[in-house]
Image (cartoon, rainbow, N blue to C red):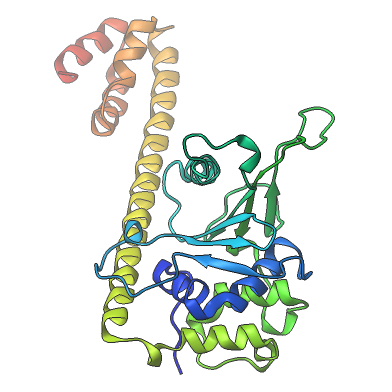
Length: 308
């Protein structure tokens, strides 16, 4: 048995945003937002998942959206790639969902609360180990809630979740483990199947149930993410290599300046600047040549001949 990976946008929406996913999404949201308490009694999935006519990347898919029994809107986003300004995008989507509730002539009292839930396959908040973070509007120094606190941002950082199957303690642990690990499993763990909604989520995630069109879409997204992750990794490696080269160059400059100051006397800033602009190869040549210098004029002559 093989399962689609919930961390892929297409798979996430199929599992949590299908017409048959109401109880699954309700269980998931209660687990993540309310520590497993049955606060959400019912919900309606807005724009339920349909097999997309266009194979493409994330922009071809809407987030999972629902309206809860108390009128609160919930938007859920699964994000694998740590793209630039992602945090601003989350805030923008939440604010847009809140603002676009009203049409011309409607009053502000009709606005309903919005919860933006983001599951990130990367760490967003350095220095904090909590897997789930909740953000609301508070007074800066006394930390009391804004009276009309109607926008809440909730983040789940998957890399910070370290528990293995045998360590899962509650429904929250199980749902986070489902999102993080289902793509690597070959069978439904008995411990997970004990929760009916999770058992049903596994059934939807079974690759056998995909149409050919769905499989093609899923595969296209998987390839896209792999390509993007490969590009990011390559860029990081190139950045590290450049960093190592720059560090090597700065170290060589410091050494050469120290030797020149001993041999030729204190150098003026203009000469130090010219030396710092040399390439690594030129610095290597200068390091050998300075052994023959008698005074600063020898250095200036060498720079005029070799730094063009």
